[in-house]
Every structure is written in structure tokens, then in C-alpha cells.
Image 1 (tube, rainbow, N blue to C red):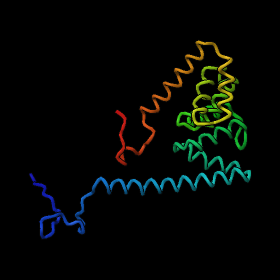
Image 2 (image 1 turned 30 degrees about the vertical axis):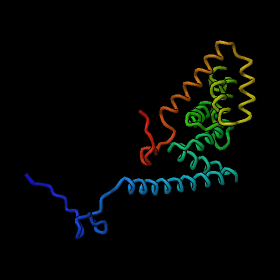
Image 3 (image 1 turned 90 degrees about the vertical axis):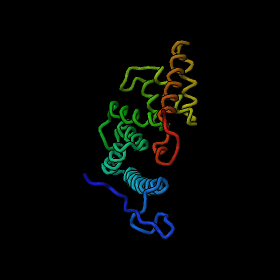
Image 4 (image 1 turned 180 degrees about the vertical axis):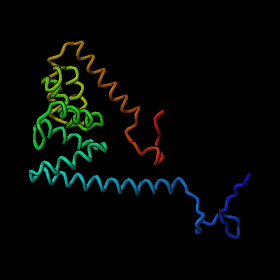
Length: 199
């Protein structure tokens, strides 16, 4: 059996020599390394998003779709919302309520207020789903909580259309959603940067 010994170099006073190749990997160094990778990833995502925006504005929906799909599949809520709009309106892709719902729902669950609003409207109008004022109220309320003024008006409108039981159920679902989001933690990098992680 072989014995493993540390080969860390020390200076004349017995302290670890940080100038050598035997440097230890510290939590602070890990954080900076993670920050570097995060910045690189955000720069790449930002670049991809700008390319998709430019393509969409010039009417090159095929390129916009490819760029957005790449970002959306990687979890980018804004790109998911944008794909929802493309499928909802039929710009650059065949119009599809099912695909619009899919992308709006993915973005809405991440807190994208415009996606929450549009998802709520789809439930309210029975567009691709059975009409459901409770779900409409839930998603529109979540959007309103982010300050969307259209959502504030729509929430008041649907509030008047619902029964007392429907309203109570919708408000409970909103609380449940917000609690689940809070429990899950809104910062995916908190563990890397020293924040609290969820129990």
C-alpha cells in the first residue's frame, strides 16, 4: 500500500508558498473562477440574443427562430417568451397555440412577466386550452405583481367575472406559486457565491 503525502511547498517560516505551482484552491478563488465563467456565458447569451433581435427586426424570422431556439432550450426565459410570440402570431413559424403555450409556460414559470400575461390571456380566451378564468387570473396576477399595467387592468376585469370560490382558489394558487418559487431560491448561483441555499 502506498502512502500519499502532500507536496505543498513552504517558505522559510513554514507557511504555504503561494507562488509555487502547489497553490491551494480556495473558496474565494472558486468564486472568481465561477464569476469568470458566468460572465463569459452571459456575454455569449447576450450576443446570441442581440443577433436574434436584429434578425427578427429585419424580418429574417428563420435566423431569429434558430437563435431563439438555441437560447430557449438553454433555459433563457426571454427567448422562450419570444418563441411563444412567434408561434402565437405565426411569424416565421406555422401558427400553433400548443407551441405558443409551451414556450409561454416555460418562460412564465421563470417569472417572465410578459409570458405570464400572454399565458393568462390564452387561458382566458380558451386559446389552445379549455377556457379557465382561475388559471387566467393566476398568471395575470403574477404578471401584475411584476408591474405590468395591462395585467393590472386584466386582473381586475377577470376578478369581476369569477365566483367567490374561483377567486379564492386563484389567489391560493398565486400564493402557492410564489411560495414554491421562494423555496426553490431565485438565485441559481447562490451556492457558488456564498448565499443561502434552500433547505
